[in-house]
Figure 1 (cartoon, rainbow, N blue to C red):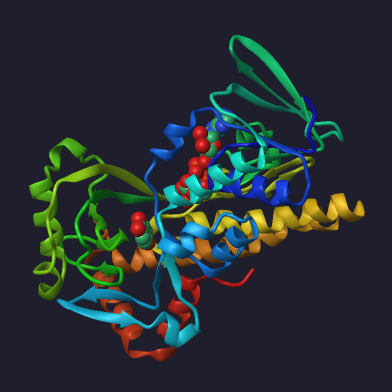
Figure 2 (tube, helix red, strand yellow; figure 1 turned 45 degrees about the vertical axis):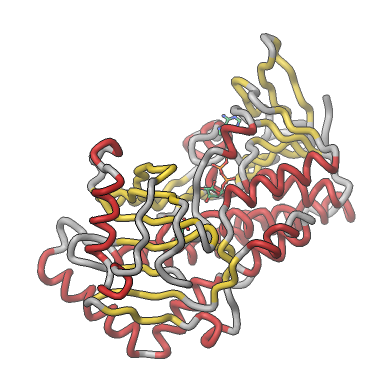
Amino acid sequence: MRVQVAIIGSGPAGLLLGQLLTNAGIDNVILDRVGKDYILGRVRAGVLEDGTVRLLDEAGASARLHAEGLQHGGFSLAFDGRNHRIDLAGMTGKKVTVYGQTEVTRDLMQERERSGAKTIYEADNVNVHDFGSTSPYTTYEHGGKTRRIDCDFIAGCDGFHGVSRRSVPESAISTYERAYPFGWLGVLAEVPPVANELIYANHARGFALCSMRSMTRSRYYVQCPLDDKVEAWSDERFWDELRRRLPLENAEAVTPGPSFEKSIAPLRSFVAEPMRFGGLFLAGDAAHIVPPTGAKGLNLAASDVHYLFEGLHEYYADRSMAGLDAYSQRALQRVWKAVRFSWSMTMMMHRFPDTGAFGQKIQEAELDYLVHSRAAATALAENYVGLPF
Ligand code: APR
Ligand code: PHB
């Protein structure tokens, strides 16, 4: 088989790129190691920036998002037993859309099927070859046979554990990493959310986040030790812990109910530089990871895809390499700002085992400054709704 662009990974990054390319008449195939149902079983964050929504509009995959997504013009920072609202709309003129990433993925998959573009699921042993040359190709195994796809370019959208980044010689790549000394225990439950907007809570017992998927489905998180086991967290223990970390008015509004998803995820910041190696381009989690505190993971994948699509489009329309040559630098400029923001939200909202009394006082001063300075709150809001791309 021969295509113009071979895309590795059928997560949001690969699917969004694939749809933009297909709509522009650029022939592409997506390869994924796992099946569709497995991909749709993964629960991830759910806050979309305007720029991400705009790209989904461009991809023609946003009808349900506009019908069902919740527009939020603010969120709450809770500490010291009180809520402090960050007025996103008032300070930036922008809102965010609360809509589950699983649904974004589902919508993109449906649009891809409708447009007849090819996806190969359950492709074993995917490999990328000769991306230093002008004729790269990928191989994979399916039904006991090895197959080959020749292409002009390879888009590595295969997540943090994917094969694309791992195929680059170590000497050609620099990585930057920070692991945080705790995890998030996340719960989904078919109960109404405690409030109309998200609540990020800093509490002596640890961070808590109240989010939602709809007005009848809630998504909650509590900070927990990295070595905690999900089995140690009964629903009862979870609801009790969540309530304890919220201001009284919110704690009283928690509607407990049986959870239908419960998992623990570690928090990490990671960036690989550059994001382009000849004909191989990394996008999304394949190139960078952010802790979920700023809800930036999917939004960063979307801005990467925007820059990469522009470069590919320019190449096929004008035979110009300018956009592709600029891809890594343009993407990384925005990536690092989101990495900084996610790190700073993480530092500000969690209890760290080793900060001591000084660190604690600094954190309290930062929160107090934030809610009493319009300038500081505006800077937070500007990052939360998403820097332009
Ligand atoms: N071969 C083929 N496919 C692979 C391989 C491989 N060796 N390794 C991983 N994949 C696939 C995974 O099965 C997954 O479907 O690549 C896809 C990567 O998807 P995501 O992990 O969702 O990454 P990305 O699309 O960059 O997502 C960006 O969405 O999923 C979230 O946490 C993620 O918030 C981030 C955003
Ligand atoms: C979520 O709804 O899952 C969510 C929302 C905001 C975050 C992280 C996760 O910062």
